[in-house]
Length: 347
Image 1 (cartoon, rainbow, N blue to C red):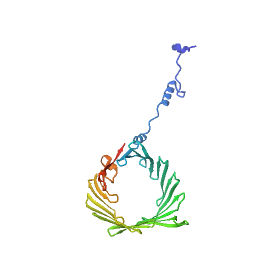
Image 2 (image 1 turned 90 degrees about the horizontal axis):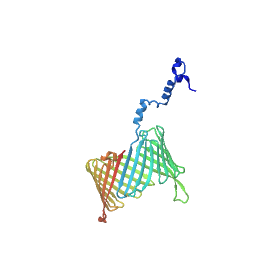
Image 3 (image 1 turned 30 degrees about the horizontal axis):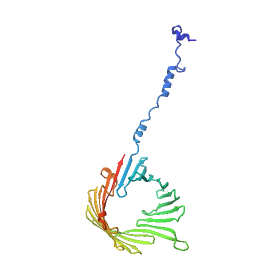
Image 4 (image 1 turned 120 degrees about the horizontal axis):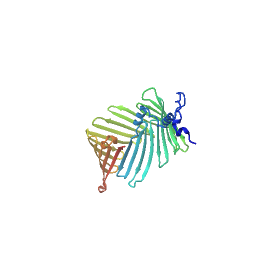
């Protein structure tokens, strides 16, 4: 049955308005329900500014082509966490677009991880500064289940440090003392030539000292001593060396005729092999080199467009090109012209 008040509103007197303490009216309830269903309030201005500045990391794509091997070497990398870490993917592909040697690496200040996709192997390297004068390092090959742990302590004297390292899980520890003039390492090893395996103490080291206008270096490793003296000034470099007890001697000679012209020569007394290289630069981004190597009986010449030793990002158009001509002495008709191109894109 219908409500009479709804049929004839004039027959009834409207009720008085509710007191302030009474329940809210239906209109107020609808408004409250609308406010509850409305989208959440905007974040503060500081949050908005952070979101605007938190852009995606820039990708760096580098591709290098070698005409000799017909391979492309590609690298894709980006920096993460405000340049605190780097993620890199590298792989090779041939003219048939077949991908080989894919690797993924993650590098940061304290941890580096390299994963080889083909070998399904992971290499982990970590560094931890437990004290301003004490550093711990660890290397681990997951597939081979081998690695190395090392501890290096800086001594009170500047330039002096002591490093203790040991292979994991099996191996003999090694102690290395580093000082301003070089370093010396001591390690036990087993003499496999003896019928009965005998442990001996292996000593390796390097010493450097300024002598007149050059640097004298003595390198002792695997019971072989190599002595080397390097003299260098603005126009001339002379580097003789000899190995004992084999008495193999050689020397290198470098002459700079001008800031843009340089000649290098190397000769080995034991084998009578020699090589020579002439280099001329045109500004910073062009370099011409020509040389001969008697060991392989090969003459060659190359032209670099872009700084040979510098990074690609500092070169014009972020690209480096090398053209090389190789001329065999015994068969000049088989000369070959090769080139390499390296290009970087920032995306």
